[in-house]
Structures are given as C-alpha cells and as structure tokens.
Length: 346
Image 1 (cartoon, one colour):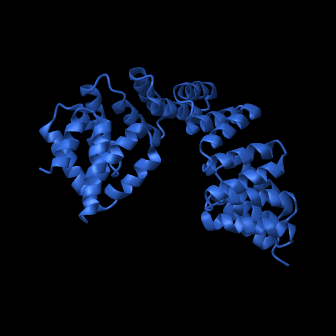
Image 2: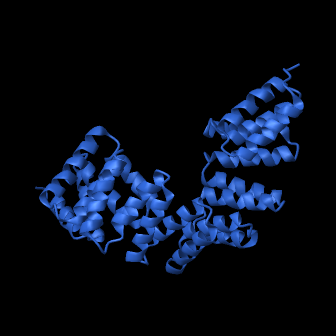
Image 3: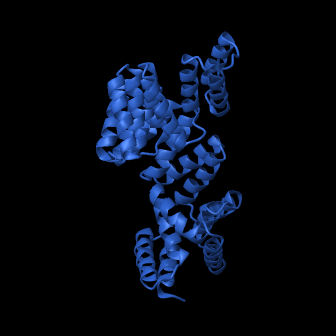
C-alpha cells in the first residue's frame, strides 16, 4: 500500500485532522508532480475542510474527487475497505458518511453517521454532519436537535453553533439565532460569517443600526464578500439612502461581477429614479446571470408598462409571477394587473 495512503488512514483512524491535512497535501502534490490524477488525497483534504467548516475550500476539493463516476467509485472503494478493515472505528464510519452524502446518497449516509455517533460518544462531528442532512431535507427540528448535540459535546465547535443559528433563523426564532451567532463571535471575534449572520438576524428584527455595524465589521474582515455588500445595500435602501445603496451594490459587483441580485437591485434603484434605460440595462445584466431572476422580470414589466407596451409588460410580469417565491410580491403584481387589465402593445 502507498506510504501516503497508510499515513492518511492512520490519521483518519485517530481523528488527527491536522496530520491528515498535511499528509493529503503532500500526497496530492506528489501525484501532480508525477502527472497522476488521484481523487483520494483530494477527498482527504475535502474531509478536513468540512470538519473545519470551510465549505468553499471543501467544495473546491469536491470537484477533484466526487464529480466523475470513476473518482466516486475509487473514493467509495477506499472508504468501504477502511470500514471493512476497521468496523469498530467511528472515524472510519464518519468519512464513509461524508463520501456517501457528497456523492448523492444522503439517506445511506445517515446510517454511517449514526454508527459513528455510537462508536464516538464524545465526538461532535457525527451529530454535526447528521444535522446537515436533516437541514438539507428541511427537517429543521431534527437538524436543531443534532446541532445541539454537537454543541453539547464541544461548546467551542463554531461550525455547529453557526449552523444551529441558521436553523433557528430559518424557523423565525431570531433571538435563539442571535444568541448562537454571538457565542460564535465570542469564540472567534474575527469570523466574518458570524458577523454577517448576526447582521442579517438583527436586520430581520428591524434593528437596522446594529445590523449595519455588523455588516461593516464583516466587510472589514472580508472585503470580497459580494453577499454582504448586497445586504448592506439593502439596509441603506430601506433607510432611504439610495446613494449609499448604489455604492454597496456596485461594490458587490466589483467583488463578483456575476452576482445577479446586485444587478437587479441597481435596476430597481434606477427605475425609482426614472432612469429607464439604465434600469433596463441592469435588469438584462441580471438575467444574463440568472435567467430565473423574478425581480429583473418584474422590473422589466414595470418599464414596458411605463412605456405603454402592455403586451411586453404582461410577458415579463408573467415570468416574474412564475419565479417569485415571495407571495407579497406576487400579490403586488396580481393587484396591478387586475387594475390595469390585459391590453396588447399599440
């Protein structure tokens, strides 16, 4: 057996994640230097990044090990073999669960996580990953139960606290969410995600000034976060500061030129200022990023209605109704259509 593989297995079986990362990085570099393509070291790196809660980095590794059928087969063969050779080792079952859940077998991964939890009664990880399966399935109470189990076993495990806060927020339990986000910030004062999440929850409570400060602090730590720039722009727009809103939306696009919601938001600001051509261009840029952007279709419908092109307006309103999830927005369009009637282009 390859020396690097042996070292990685030893690190997995003892839950030595930093050692696993070091061995896997060295293994992947050796493979690249010799021109070999091997998904196994990338899966090992993926495991560590997931445990660390670094999902963007984990996703990069996922593309190198769990997208092609032959790569999935090789990873699965390795982890299944490890479980067969070490059936009483909880960490072997844990990574088997990660391989299953990331290759489209979430239901089967539950059994692996539960076995890992039985064999590792003091570990937060099986509960943390099991909670993610429940959360993706929209079983929020079950997810919250497992996240709480993870936090009980390791109160300093910030990824579990963060996700627990998100689950509470999805349920509308904002005070509970805010409590968890504040605990994460106590543990990791420089965590931009926790600050952004706290800002979002505070904004939902209508506490705009504290939310504003959280977003600003998050951006000081990570100026390239398009979503936070966008959220900050939304707060400014709510407060009637369209100049600052536009600035934030443009900064979101500097961070990510393909961030469609920022194009839509700029379109709506321009529309409110009666800059119809500018608005139209922004809405079309939004649709180039996302062909199902309801807000962009809604805005184009408004522009065509103002120009007296009723048929074109109707076509865009219809698409907005199709893609909007917000019932209030749907009702707004339906009320407008009811008042104006169905009139074709002249």
